[in-house]
Length: 308
Image (cartoon, rainbow, N blue to C red; front, side, top):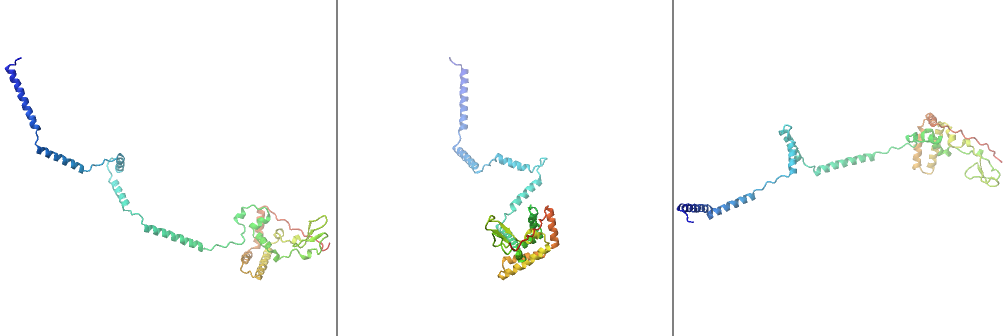
C-alpha cells in the first residue's frame, strides 16, 4: 500500500537517527595505534611489578595456634597485655642466647680433677696397712648365733679358757709325758701283741679274741678336753706358755727362725700372757650355764699289773 507523506518523513527520520548512532559508536571504538601500544606497555609493567613483589606466605593453622597461645601468655585476665610478661620473655631469650656451651677445655679440667681425686683416694686406701687380727677371737658375734652340740665346741668358740685348752692340746707333748712308762706292763698278755705307736695298748693276735684290744694307759692323766677342762685357767696358761717356749726352741734347733710357724708362736704367746685366769674361769662357767651345759667328769684311772 502507498505510504502517506507524513509516514515517509517519519521513516526517513528514523534511518537518519540510526546512522548517526552508528557513527557515534564507531568513533568511540576507533582508538589510535599509539594509544593501544602505550596501554600494552602499562599492562606489562604492572605484571612485572606484581611478579617482583614476594607474596606473603600465609601461616599454617598450627603455627597460628602456637602464636596465639604464646600471645595468650602475655594477656592479663582483664584483656590487656602485661609489660612484665614481655620483659620476662625478653630476659629469658637473652639468657638462652648469651649462655655459651661448655667448652672442651673446661670439661677436660673437670674430668682431670675427678681422676686426681680418685687416684688420691686409691693411694690412701692402698697405703693403709690391714690390721692384724688376733690369733684367737673369743666370743665373736657369729659364734654367739651358732648352736653348739657339746661343751667343748662352745668353750672353744666363745671362751678364753677354751682357747687355752685348744692351743695346749695342739702341743701337749712338750710339757706332758703320757702314758707314764711306769704304768705300762712290761710284758704283753697271752695271745696279745704290742700295738706299735701306742704304748700301753695291746691287740689280740691268736685265740678266740683275735682283733680285740686292751688299753692299759692311765685315762685320768690323758691330754684330752674332759681332763683339761677341770683344770684351772692359771694352770692351763702356765702349761701353754711352757709348751710354746719349747716349741720355739725346737724350731730354732732346726734353723727355722723366720718361718710362718715362728710368727704364729710369737703372736700366740703375746695373747696368752694377757689372759686373766680368774676372769677366764668365770667366763667359762657363765657360757656353759647360758647354754645349759655341764662338763663331763674326769676319766677314771686304770689299775694295771706290770706282769701277766
